Length: 490
Image 1 (cartoon, helix red, strand yellow):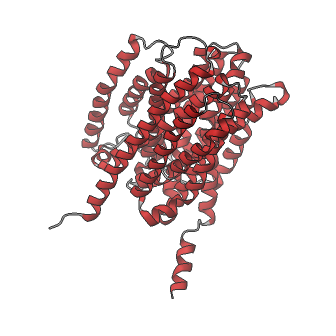
Image 2 (cartoon, helix red, strand yellow):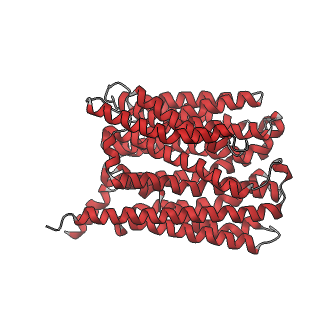
């Protein structure tokens, strides 16, 4: 009897063929999109030389994608809820593929910046459909595994982006230098477009009207936050940046009131106010923001340290960061089993603790290695340790949040989570940049390792602090989960 029960449980946790196909396709799309967010970091020197771009223009190549992607994610997710996730997946994939082609063919900095903005807008339509499809297409008993796989893809893609870029730039395919890092998306996109009608489950959508007022307001809100955070430092923190930041809380209040009024009138808001009444949802969004404010800046500034301070090439830089992905992939693949045994809050807390310890050891390693000799190898154990923590957070947190969400809200919530990720990344880059570039106003090529070594250590203090704050948020989530489970005593 027990053997039959064990066998049945084993079968219930295996993906059915249709689920496996859907997961494979949307995870492939996720890999393409996420690799593209980090792929430019390694290509910056090559891109700058070939196009004759200034430092601000190169930074706009990155910032243009990030801002365009982030400001439309919630709207892109809600469009999937309203008009069908497969339809919006295909529209996003077609647009992203064409935008990637435009990036690869760009003849000047202005053209590349415009194409990257187009790419970001396309990604904002495509990415929320990935999380929502996993949420809808895969039953709860197997959904933890699906989100664990997505966590592994997030980890691998973040590192694989620079590695792929390094390989393509080093190979200098057909003398195209940096261009293949964008052109490689074209055949991948064509495959996604061809297979989506058969592999992404059909979804008609709610066929309700989009909340235009809410969409415009949330876009303005995110622009007021992201534009100053992404380019404010490079502009010397001008007055207009501070004025935009001051507009953000006003726009947030306006957005929340608009959504409440719309729901009272029986209309369908962009993001239901009822979601905010769940403390676990609010804390999870905050955790997503804080966590990525620690993860993303490390990759950017460590890449700058290796390339501009120690003369690493694109491929060597990417290889030096690979241990992070190795550690993260290992625990991501096992995270669903860890959650089943120890609960999601305990798993998240263990992951954050590993990240705190790993990042603190990074500071010690850089401090000990004064010359920078073999720094990539010296940092490998600490990056594996931090990566192990990352893998215990990404998938379990996604599954924890999405398990509390109605199916007709899955797209909008997917967009909200992805927005928190992008907002946290931009906030982390800005805050760590204050420590990293303190008092520096020259070109990146003017930086030397002794200065970068000190800057990297100061920046990692910011990273450790963010991971510690994430641990505190997990503790609050765990306390709330215990209260929900225990219920009233009378």
